[in-house]
Image (cartoon, rainbow, N blue to C red):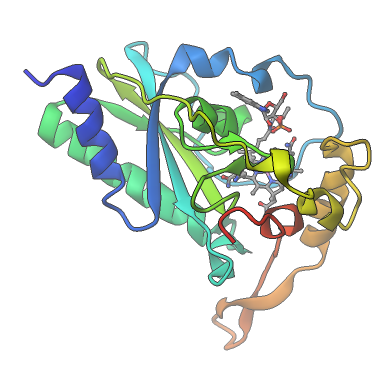
Length: 243
Ligand code: B12
């Protein structure tokens, strides 16, 4: 019988054996009590479509969530380009989630359910889950900051069956306290003009990015590069943490 603590350690080290991955474990009920679930989202929702198969019901026995964070380096911007309905980063996170699901079944006979990206399709608010699991903290750019990579990280979650010990939230990591808030100044839309993030202003930039696709993708059937969406990353890439 594997103890809770060693099961957690093994799952985290298996997840982190994939290149550019950090992981944490959190109780589902704690995520569902997080600030994003209390907030009333302002402004229109985004129109991004992915994850064609929504999850209608989470399995009753799942009480824990494994959070994955994938490093999105500035020098590898392609990970973040939207091409053929998804990004390379999301595809990689989905692939790793599926490999971890198979590993948990084979090694521990435990069920796992990789979750969709969108909350409306059964996904979780991933920044809350990542903060609670100790992957990072929320910065003044309203993004998750990892101590080593800063905000250059993309997230995904997997529901787990079984009794895991959770990983602890970070303490003593407060880089924004002494920062000159480059992130807020970098926003092309001034989405932080009231001192905090405004979704309804930010989404105007995101919608403009959707309208302004650029031929920077893979070579398509017509021999030309596919059109991709390059979503704005100004508040992310201006952050000195992990730059
Ligand atoms: C919808 C969505 C959008 C919408 C709306 C964004 C919004 N914040 O409302 C639009 C299209 C505008 C958008 C823009 C962007 N997004 Co977006 N988005 C999402 C999505 C699907 C849900 C986010 C959401 O609705 N949150 C709910 C609203 C109400 O809360 P919030 O503004 O996020 O703020 C909450 C947190 O900050 C939290 N919080 C604050 N302090 C603390 C402290 C603790 C202890 C806890 C637990 C929580 C907590 O509470 C706040 C609410 O009160 C997530 C994926 C997911 N499933 O979570 C990605 C996600 C948040 N987006 C992401 C990214 C990268 C971006 C962009 C940089 C664009 C891009 N290049 O992809 C910008 C950045 C905007 C910004 N600075 O916040 C990443 C963030 C990665 C990271 N390092 O944090 C995510 C996680 C997706 C991913 N691929 O991993 N996004």
